[in-house]
Amino acid sequence: MKLIVPAVEVALSLLWSTAVGWTILRRWLHDCLPAERVAWGLAMGLLTRSSLYLLALRVHVSPSPAALLGGEMLLLVGALFIRSSPKTTPLPHFAGLGAHILFALAVLIVLANGWRFVSRPLWTTDYLAIWGLKAKTIFFSHSIPDRVFHDAGTQWSHPEYPLLVPLSLASLAASIARFDDRALGILYVAVELATISIIFGYLRRSTGALLGAVGALLTALFFPLYQPVNAGTGEIPLALGFLLLGTAYLDSLEPGRENAPLVRLAIASLYCAATKQEGALFVVVLAASLAISSLRRKPRTPLPRDLLKCELVLLLPLVAHAALLRMMRGPVIRRAFDLSLIRPGKWPEWWQRIAQALSHIARIEVPQASVAIGALLTLLLLTKAGRSGILLGSVLAQIAVYIVIMSLSALGVDWLISASFGRLVETLVPLILLITVERLGSFQSLRPQAARALC
Image (cartoon, rainbow, N blue to C red; front, side, top):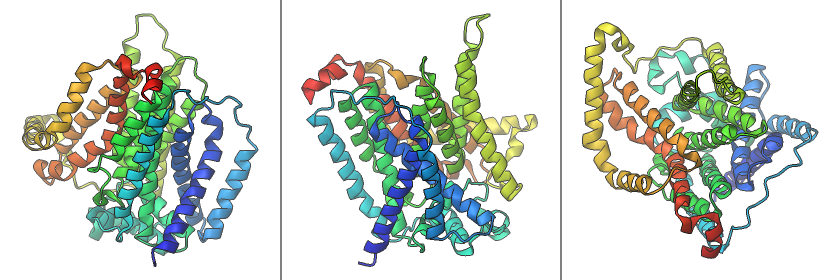
């Protein structure tokens, strides 16, 4: 019974935050379906509340529930005065009973699995040592003390990590005036719901409602990511960020689009960069992919303005966030990696470490996921690339960069891969599922016109 009251308060606080985020972004969501708007609303709500909370801390205003509510109310009212676009994407007509049943089943699986997030206080080691430690320090000290970044006794808490997750936890706790480690697990349930929502919405408008529901169901069933050990950390929010960034990136590349996808791309870039360093890395990977595609254009062909806009929209939020974080914390010591290996004189040793990393992954990591890898490869071979196929190269590049970075580990290559590689790849799986499920639309029997008959 002690959980019910704070759990209801957290749920209502998240609903309100999502409504505020949706209202702020609604002008730039007119080409999205309702399910996608929910996901964007939650992401924008987390960014908005964390920013308000951080602002209150910096100006020494007590971030009480009333103060946060008042600030969000002002933003909501101000956003209502901004005229939204009258154009909206109409719902496709082929959403039948089967698609609705599958999506409802996915939601039920998320809710049932979410009980494991709140059945006991957040307990995972990374939460206690990193994310939760920072969130509690910020919440109880009503500040972001210097020790969060420069305490030699807590170097294992990764002071170089971005602060969106700790600020989200602390601001959510501030909105209910107490830090309840069980009730705060609902945040991760909400993030997972947003994840399956954006998959369902995007695939519904690009391929069909049936495949959208299948993608949402497969994501909900991906328990290696959505397990209690990841509650309280940055992995589950990062998976949502990859999807937001990927779908906004695809929309922004479509010819004839307005600026709405570019605004969403900027929000997704900021969300990813503020969540984890791997999120910032994916932003850079996508920007590099754009640059490479522009270099492959025909000679003497002018560089398309849309590509330049996308590059700027991707990178400017990343640079702004990095500058703000540097101003807040100053330089931090990174002891987890031996960057001296990058020097040309140590390249032979570095190549040996890369070979060691590849060998470890081939011997241990790949066999553990052999069934899933085999199924994905089979689908990729039997289907044609869909609209999201251009993201596949970026996903593979992201994984390749993970391997190179882990070869620089100062604590042992095998140890770092065993501890982190699988978890990092898991955060990309929802995006990989979106890419893979969309390819199923290449089967004529599963095209939107035939989906009506199946549903």
